Structures are given as C-alpha cells and as structure tokens.
Length: 257
Image (cartoon, rainbow, N blue to C red; front, side, top):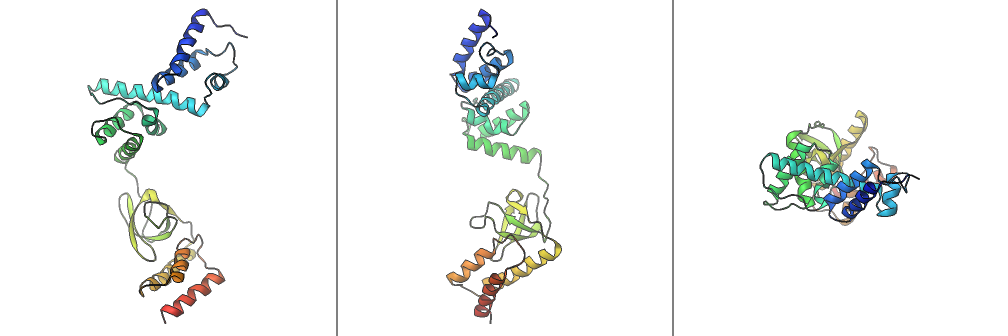
C-alpha cells in the first residue's frame, strides 16, 4: 500500500476539512484530491475513497467539482469586466449553467443576465434556468423545423392539450400556430413533436380532424360525446379501430343528421 508523505497527509486533512464546508471549497478540494491522488494510500480509486470517507456518489462529486469551476469562471468574468454583481451562494444556482456546458465567458454572461432578472439580487435556480434558456435562444436562434400541414403532437405549453395531436397551420420563427379539433393555439417549437405518418396516414388524420371539428361546431356536446372526442385527440395512429369508428358514427348520427 502506498504511503503518503507527511506533507501530502497534512494537505489531505486540510482538503477533507474543506470538503465539509461550502460548495465552492468542497468542489475545489475534491478536484485537488483527485488530481494529486491523495487517496492512494488506502484506496484504489477516487470513487471508492469519496464513497467511503464522505458518502458521496460520483454524480454528486462531479456536480461539486463542476460547480466550483463554474463559480470561479463567473468570479473571473465579473473581475475582468469590473462588475460588482453578487456571486453564487449555492450549488443549485450554477447547476443550470454547467449542465448546459457553457464556456467560462458564456457562464459569466448568463450569470449577469440572471442577476438582472432577479433585480440585482442572487438569483435562485429557476431564474438561472430562465436566463440560460433566454441566452441560448438569443445567441443561437432556433430554426423552426416544422412546415404547414404537418401533423404533430403537443408535448407541453398548452393547458389541457398535452399529448394531443394537431395540424400546423402557420410557421413562425420559433413557434407554430396549430389547429386541434376544437381550437387553435400558438405553440413553441420546443413543445411540439412531429408524428411520423405517411402521406396516406396524414390524410386519414386530417379527415378524422374534420369529422371531429364538425361535431365541435354543433354546440354543446354531452359528457359522453366529449369523452370520446378527448380520447380521439390523443390517438397515436391514423386509423380508427372498428369500435372507435362505430362510436364516432353514433355521434355524427346524433348531432349532425
């Protein structure tokens, strides 16, 4: 078994103390222990050392080290640009930054944006997440991949319509206007997912949509009718099965004849 020098043992004791303090010193100390292999007298690898001594998983260890590096990137950016914005105080505040793999300069720019959003105070995680998203959208504008007439599924952003299929009626920079069977919505491209249909299958879906829309336009529908239509708006296939077709036909006979 390898024996640490007295200087190495003393350094490790100091670093282990730092690990048990704030998140910046913790991450910095863990990185130094890993780099200098100060665990090698009793452990074969860094992971087993951290688990045994601190009870840390490798996921948490990596977060600690990246959080410290991000903190110092932000601090250097503020110093270089003569800015007096407050620095992060918790690991959670910088997690959205290092999880997005931003460069040191980008990390500083995002932090300044987050502080501004928080009215010059230390921003909580949710505000930093918003700043990261806004920053990336401004620096790397999204390209709208959708086209008119395309059938998609709504994955979020529209209350009550998650997982519903829709038809793109117009395309904007980073959002689409979509038609469902009973309404029209403006949906972010991040909240749309294309449905992989052939041309024939797409035509079947469009036909189904027209039939459902016709029912929505007759006025107030009873609970059973709404139950069926709300089930059909979440279909993952283009063709109705025999029972679904019969039930839809019953509604059409009841309301449209």
